[in-house]
Length: 102
Image (cartoon, rainbow, N blue to C red):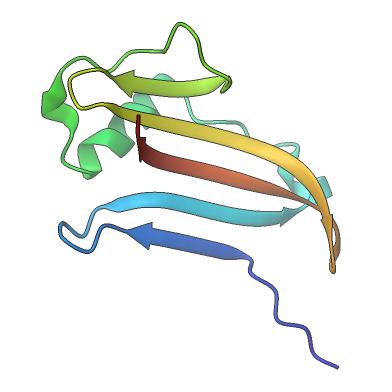
């Protein structure tokens, strides 16, 4: 029968309308060429969420994420990551960009 698979999702803050998470599922062969965002792109993600004015966005010294920015003033963390997984549709990679409270 037909399978329902999540290929992407966007989570928004219900109060502000700002995007707080983007999640994509890609075929394994397509994902390897997809780079993680640079610091400028992470800062733009903070700006679209209305958090640019916190003013102290920086790469965290101790983080499990290779691609991240944190704001101590806002107690916020922006992360980007990719990871392989095997699902019902075969070998895939997820790509995640999220804003979370620290």
